[in-house]
Each structure stands twice: as structure tokens, then as C-alpha cells.
Length: 108
Image (cartoon, one colour):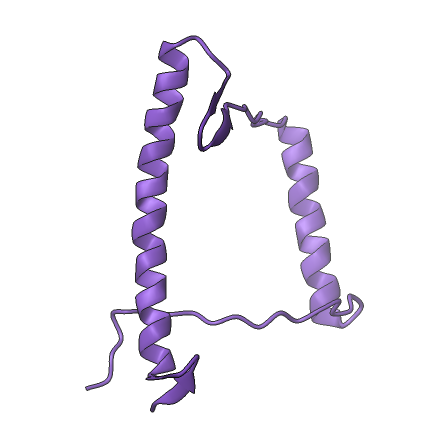
């Protein structure tokens, strides 16, 4: 199925699949470059660096490990939420639609 898009006849399913693959490849490369830039900043003993491309800076994010008491309460809260969803007490705030793509499943 072809449609006209910006003056070209394209198959939107094919274009979407191509873009998703490009995103995946770019994200892999971005993560590799991020690690290299981080290593370079660390080697230079810097937290930030201004280049002709912009300011790069290194930030940290804390990750927490909670006590068993807090984990138990979080689990209890999760079960309470699920119960309210099932019983119809909780109300749907919003439904967001999005497209999923599994490249392993293809038609011939």
C-alpha cells in the first residue's frame, strides 16, 4: 500500500520499519559515544567541557535500595492498585496509543 508523503509515493509500513531500525542503530552508536566521551572527561579530570558542538557535562543519578519494610509496603500498594483496577474503583485517566513493531513476524 502506497501513499503520497511529501511529494513521494511511499509504503508507510516500510518507512516506519526503516526508521525504527535506524533509531536502533543510532541509539547503539550514541551509547558507545557516550561511554567514550565519559571516559575522556574522566581522564581529563573534568565534569564538563565546552566544544564547538556545545557543552558536554557528566551527571550522576542515585539509585536506592530500600529496606524490606518499604519493599513490603510497595508490594502491598501495588496489590491494592490492581484490586481497585479489577473492581472498577480506579478510573482510567488516559489511554495512549502507540505502534509496536516485531521484525521477526513478517508476511510474504
